[in-house]
Image (cartoon, rainbow, N blue to C red; front, side):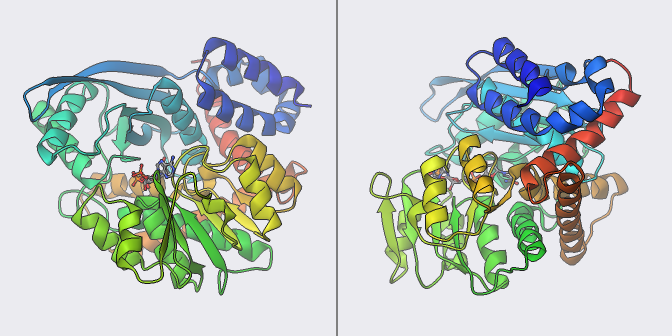
Length: 447
Ligand code: NDP
């Protein structure tokens, strides 16, 4: 029973009513920190956990912009600057109609530990808007991004807070936001990451989260005497993370058989043709995976409501779409079908119940804050290149990414063992990520 942690979980729920995703991550992280809190009474005495679960700063603002028909549209913008113990706030921006404060806080809280695990000097933050980029023209996207940045620019900076992309925010949006920041401040600085190559972006940033997901999973499999070769892999999502997870898993000899979006999934027994999907998506950013099935002989589209992607028999599952896409019944199905490992490419794709079930049933579970840390790790490498006014080669960045992901698995594995939970990589990542932040917070006084 998580006796010490429970009181903080209760505080978080009471102070943040209705923010269910935030409650979910608080519960998941704090429960696994119980043995650490028992071993370190000084953290309790200094109110460290109460401080950790309260963002340092939360900004909410109006974003008014004019659509192509001349009509005024009003969205809501967010930036939650959660914790700066380890460095400037760092974390992406999400543009999706489901965005509200609870989603941004869950993502921001996760980001603190994820960034800590990378070993790089970055604090945790997250932002976004309930703006829906789907169906908008490039000009509408530009006007929205400029309006969003006009307010956000007051709170960010290369040494203060460095946003990046997330769902709905890719290279196009980062470009428009960077341009507006430059116009407003008269500074060409590394204030955003995920920039274009040639104007401050890092090679391998586009691939980083998907590649990193597979590097971490490779290490998890290796520690348990297994590898990707010949394994059937189910990947959900079809965006940035999913695309490059498919590419790297295939490089390691896996047969990846699915992709998905919010309308359904495609099953391609012969192996997803990643190049074909990236071509379709590059030609039309709003393209649906159903179009892949229409173009690829032998591939089948299964619409939402007619089957779950997790019903597809596989050895390894990589959920790379969105939060709470893999629930308890899905976990049971994966287990019954012989799946040995699940690694979270997306943020919090598995419910807490599903994670507990999979760990209890001896499946290997790689948690998001470790598995998908490759994106922010390469973002931090982009910041280093910007500060030095240098550009590293693809191979240099990719090899640093591989080393970082390998180390994240190692420190998580060691922390799980040190606190009596060998093989529980979820607890291990939480503990390893937390300890570094806690030490820095203790050293910096009560803030
Ligand atoms: P994208 O916007 O590029 O892609 C998201 C994909 O997930 C789309 O194909 C989308 O489909 C699909 N999706 C969204 N909601 C659902 C749903 N309910 N059911 C099925 N599919 C869905 O985002 P990213 O690839 O960048 O991000 C994916 C996840 O990875 C997110 O959780 C994000 O926070 C996380 N992440 C991303 C990082 C990055 O570097 N990009 C870094 C670390 C984590 P549709 O178009 O139909 O909505």
